[in-house]
Length: 151
Image (cartoon, rainbow, N blue to C red):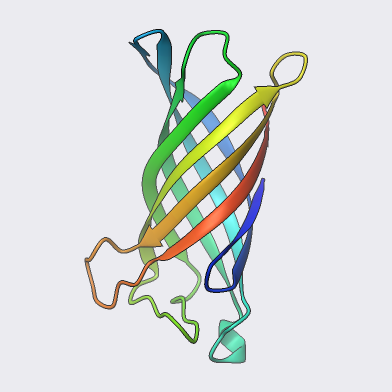
């Protein structure tokens, strides 16, 4: 689960599932692992042009890489790039996307905790845009606080 907002006044709440993938690499004293995230997000657009554009839904599938500086460290850094689709084209007073299909990228720093390291909290920066496939392509940036419970 995660929640946050953009500098343009868009608030988001998201829920999803993440699967660990079997790909792992040793990087110095640390380890680089992989996972796949599938999520649903609700965007509340406070500065919508029309009332029907006051919110939208977003679905995403994002493969990610996670780096832990050493085997016992509770700290990690995540990054990923994936595909997203929204229920309508995003429009606000300041910005308008040209497509419902976009790319999502993120960078996060977080920490695992709990008796079995089953809890995680992370600060995550996300960017959504169509990577220049169609104009306009203003993109939107979000700051998110994320909580994960590992099963």
